[in-house]
Amino acid sequence: MSFCPGFCEPLACGNMGDWPHGFCRSDFIINPNLDFNNFQQESLDSIKNFSQYYGVEESVWEDIILKSKTVEEIRSKIENKFKDYEFIFYRWNQCLFYFYEWISKGDDFLWISMIRDPLDRACSSWKKHRWEIKDSLENTMYFASKVEILSSHKNFYFVYYEDLVDNPEKTIRDIYSFLGKDISNVNLTEIKGSNGKDFIPQSSDIKDVYKKKDGYLTDAEKFSGLYKNKIGRNKNEEYIDNITRESFKRFLSGFQQYERYFKE
Image (cartoon, rainbow, N blue to C red; front, side, top):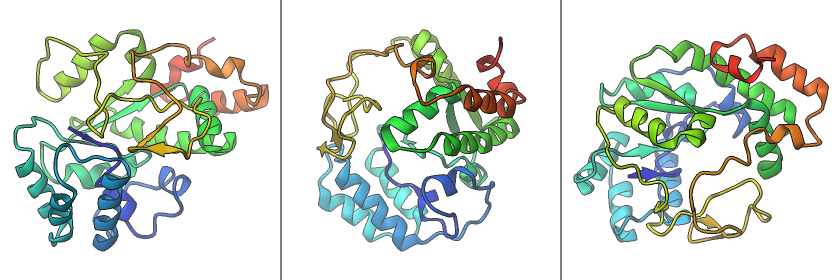
């Protein structure tokens, strides 16, 4: 089961700067100043806004979250409620700074991050969120430095977006292997969203990024499989000029994990 983006502890940390850029550029933290009341409210709001009920009544979620005294108590109640699930995932975009705090909870707490061509990512971020290209560059630099530090850590695993699209079965099996489990059949079509219904891809090409229904942007169709037409999109986007392209290359080609994107 995967929550997107519910139970986001990092968002409840104090003195982290503005979302998203302050979080993207934050250094690793240990023993953060966490606002528990904010954590409770943000978690409950995410469940309601994204319809992440998973067959459980809203009143039950309110009981799990609002009647708990600590984050650990909330997680314990969730795990007990969904005890038949082997894995519970939390989607924490831009929050790699929280890695050490997360894994301090035990060996069963793992972290998976995805790397994508930074130029393609910058195009998507501009088109969907209107992030300035220079902001995407700086954010990626901070992210890349953290990935480089964590790349050999036993609790950390990174996946290339392009590998997932090119060979999804192998990539997903590798992820399961990191989680300590073999998987024989990989489902690539009948994917369910956080609302329990057919998953709707949240592409940057969606025209109205603020119009939602049942937790999802609505200007899209049911997921029908991974597609490759967004790989290399930066070559066709007019707002990635040569100076910007060279800036990305100059700053990121020194990171081993990003070398593949800047080879001649």
